[in-house]
Image (cartoon, rainbow over all chains, first blue to last red; front, side):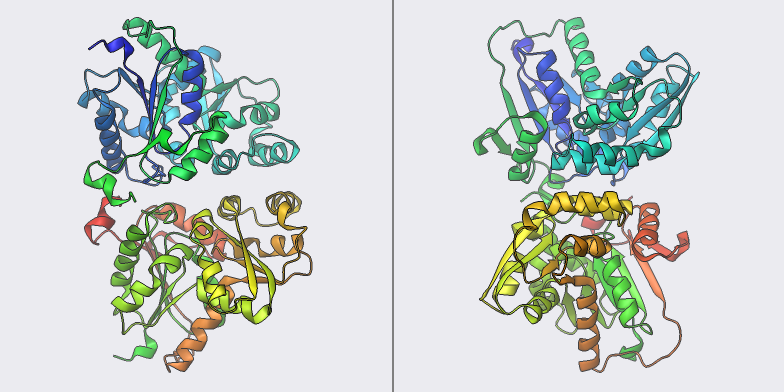
Length: 278
Length: 278
């Protein structure tokens, strides 16, 4: 089997990882992709670490052997399950979203304060704080939970005066501080990058989706796994529930119209998957 | 055992049912309550009917024998699991949120158009449309999904100019129609009743939390189950996960500050509960 022509696997608890897929598609236009959204069991953020590790294992098990590398395009799963996945699937290159975001942060700022915008669970687990501290101890990380941004992204409210006013209100306590950069630590937030950047004026905003895409490209190149073909790439979608909602979100997050048969409903999976799958 | 002095059980997938509990507390100030929030497995809206029925059964099983009646303060569980619960627990009076809301609607409007605001899942299952049609076929029901209102309620964004602008934008396509009444078909939405009512000007807004409380009072009175005591009532809380978040929401939804030991983390439950409980 020629590994180079295998697709890249992208896994998320739901639809947020579609922003990462979109950036991957732009950075690697001749690669094929399989996107797995565990829509039956979202959100992962309110689950225990043990449960998230179990779900991530099942997802990796579904994609293993079918893909040449796996992108964990979910901040919660990246925060708690990445080490475990890498140990359990030693032959599969696995890349999370937290480390590339942290790396981009320390490439941008040498010392002082940075702000990470994320969901409640990611801020509660301090994943970015730890990842940035392991690279540079002179940086002080403030993590701000912005759950409303998830709802705005899923509603397609991503620009305009009203959305700017909402973002300003969410971020108001941070706007008087001086940050070296702002890290978007949730895969939904690249949808609101323009609005967030406007609030912070000249401060660089690190879009985790595009830095992850760059990290994947570097890794594949390093491992000589890039696809040499020149033809149009293909994306397969797998969702564990709610195909209709997934279609609507794919349209909002990636600007693509999926027909029903382009998404496979995955229910032939371990019992924990079946438990919440129609 | 004196049934009258037993508490009233209130069950929801998470925190939305706290608005119903708040209305129950006001309508029945001398009653005790046990509130069960299945925070480990929310949201129910994205689950299959079969799964929601299973979860509702487990919740009713936990509260059965400990309570004199059960209020299913969750639109999703009321929509799909109520008949089944009533058959499985024939000795326990069980009251959902959809029927009282539908009844209040037909008491307000004799014919013409009404608007139901709800979550995506409740609108997808047409629970209010069916319940209202079973009472009055001259009423045409439009169901509008407003997922952003859930996020606003949970963030405590419930009034002020910005929230009014957001509500106006969410509802804009409905504001040119002539509705006889607006039904709040999600337990989160009573938090935004003032803002929603302002958008619709003179149109009556039916707050499902308070009509459910009235229905429970009538039912208990009819079955001679009201508590005759005059002392201060007690509320116990059970959550299946995320105690900290539950506390924060209780403060937002009910204006009460819960100490940590007032909430019991319920993990000694059937396997399906355990699966996602820390």
